[in-house]
Length: 205
Image (cartoon, rainbow, N blue to C red):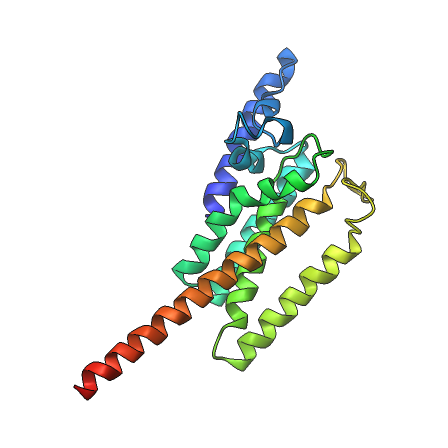
């Protein structure tokens, strides 16, 4: 998943660079635009590939590698990966709640979803240490979201960044990632309990 996101971002950025000398902006055809969602739903996926500066791209590529490393360290199962894949378009769709954000692009919302998925999986672990780690990661995400003051406006201009940031995308990513991961873990626990119950019935017979 992380490799797919990185590859798509690099390809989209290369197209953007090729179009720049001619005054073209290919990203306009792929970034998130809420007004076009009904007629161009693919933007919910392609928006993640769009980056508006070198710094924006490099930061998100590093973030994608970080999420991949976190997932590998936590040894997340396939259901967590599926939850992250499903979160990809839903993060952008969540931005429909902010129609005044007329353009959006980047991996950050999807990456926040990935971190939330991993942390939620850890919270469901039988290991107390892993549960503590998951709680710390989720608490860190919450503090980050609060520090970005998403209630102030749809975009912010953090010091040191050469682009505007959309805190709402990060909120959308965390919430959607957490919900999908909770559903995945609950479904897995339910199926495991059912198998154990059926196994006990078979053993009794």
